[in-house]
Image (cartoon, rainbow, N blue to C red; front, side, top):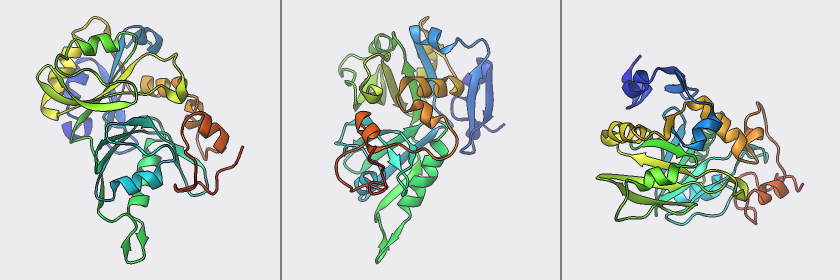
Length: 285
């Protein structure tokens, strides 16, 4: 088992009795831990997950905003925005619903821990490479796996905000639907507070923490020092994705996924107009 394929935290996972499995994207991911709490129990405190093995992409360069606008059906993001965004195929089928974050004028980060993540990564790679008249349709954009740039950790549950607030002093934690640079003690990180899926207010707070690889083990161990924090694997992550969002059950199914514009609009996943891939093929109902 290579450390590179298992991610920077592989030794930490092994110490916790992790069951590592092959990711659909080719690396290794934590399926579960020995003695892992069930998800409802973990969320009463704070569930901590390493998202290594998930679809985790950085679109950067002059064409990044154009690619995001074409590939994502929701509102156009401003710098510092984070939102769940629909991604449609050309026939209007729902590919997946990644978390999209605009981390700079020419940077978008997309993260999808669901079972649809590999399909999303392949589809975005196809769109990024499309040829138009005279060259690439999205000239000047680079789409890359971001897992070796910043390690993605999810902290979710009733106590997640209180635990994470223990690390901050100068900068506040971002509000729901925002991503911002935050120093967690001395560790410079990007922190996003996830928006409520589909506008629901019943879900426990969830934070995505993007941390430099050199500091990932230190922060991982520090978070687990809280009695309220429990590690969970990707099986629990997918259960969380399935049960916490109105589109979750759809993305847990195999095969094409058809959703009408009305449902997408109700969930906040589609904008007016037809300037995104699949818009013309969307069923009205």
